[in-house]
Length: 171
Image (cartoon, rainbow, N blue to C red; front, side):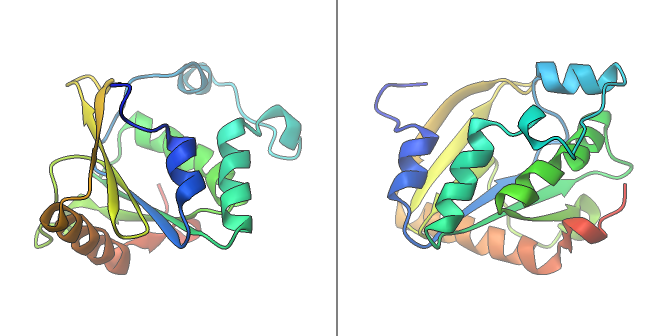
């Protein structure tokens, strides 16, 4: 990632009202946690200290400051194994304070969507994720371009309105 791109923690730290995240891919680069899940290892959700990560604490701290954090995922159905895992670990996101919704891709056909995943902070600053074909982050880009922000804001809100809340979305 270029050094001129602030870290996610910095961007969230500057956030005053809202942060939204749109995910468009059906898989991302595998992580150790995903591979452990594939091997059949499951999280003991009753032992928070075993799964709570710095990301979860960052989200909790940000929400505690009054910032709304929403995440929407557009997914193909039937879902990939990676999406099954994401659905499973979303318990941590929700516990930390994120609101999460899922939209089946077939319901997104009429929504103008950007070509990349993104985070939008306070409706003005975008952090766009550029991935390789196998789901590795190649680069993050920061932009405040009004037209790009407008497209991403509109896309996220349209997805959010149609999407199913996490606790109701069944895999």
